[in-house]
Image (cartoon, rainbow, N blue to C red; front, side):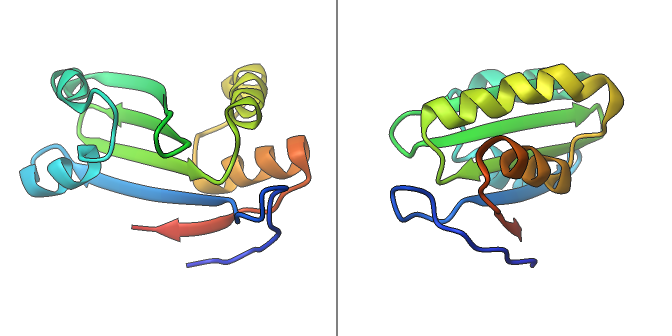
Length: 123
């Protein structure tokens, strides 16, 4: 686990939590999908190349889920406001054709957009 640390305006630390699982590992997929909004609708779509983002209002977390048809990766971004998370999405959309999504790229986007360093956590 790498830790950076600068609290947001609300005193929370920003975290990027990476969870990944093979589609053949039912328990790991269930663990990955458990916190996601509308996870039941996501599961059947993961067998193909897939990318989706979902904001969860109750927990103020932004979920970025990608699948290559064999492995699913979920990046949970915690500690940002909805507006901050939306700005990160816009920034990613502007540069995504040049980059592979991982926690380091997300951390750089958050830092460059908001001047906040994120704590990286591997689940």
